[in-house]
Structures are given as C-alpha cells and as structure tokens.
Length: 113
Ligand SMILES: [Zn+2]
Image 1: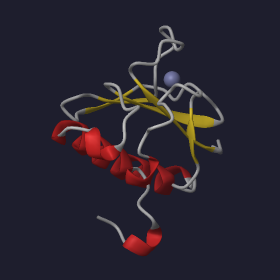
Image 2: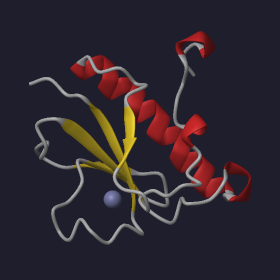
Image 3: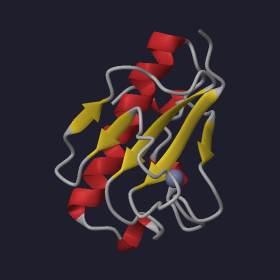
Image 4: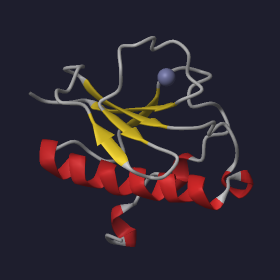
C-alpha cells in the first residue's frame, strides 16, 4: 500500500457522517486509531474541536493536540514512507482557512522533537 499523504480534519467537520477517521486526536490529546485504514490513498487524521483559528487564538490543550498530531504524522510518515509535508485539508471549511498548518509540520531542518 502506498499513500499520497495525510488529510486533516477537525471535528466541526460535518461531512464525514459516520465513515470515521483513521486517527482521532481527542481534546485530551489521547490518540485513538481505527483498527484498519479506510482510504487506500490518504491517511485521515481528525482533531477534536474547532481548529479554524490562528495558532495564537488556540488554547493550551489545542496547541498540545497540534503537537501530538505533528508527532503522529512524523511517525506515520516513517512507517508508511510518506513525506510529512504532504498534508491536505479535507475541504475548504475543514479544518478551515485559519488552520495553523505551520504548527503541524516539523520541517526536517528543525530536527525531531
Ligand atoms: Zn473533514
């Protein structure tokens, strides 16, 4: 199986309707993974909450969720040989125009946290 990248959702997303996500990052930063990956081309990661806000406006718990997400993406990118830079939004409203993408990407030049 080879993946083209990651698709990021937040739980304000209404269009998934029970299909589920491959990885869910709860408001308490606990990661729940689905037993099977559902999409052969992308890995779907959902952050619980509304992340259509700039990083400065997010609370401590939400910033922690983004940090956990960045570590998860790094780990999955190694495991499945996907570039951690191949991150895509689900739609124009999910996770939203204000989503702080830069916080999700650990650029190789920054090293591993
Ligand atoms: Zn979505």
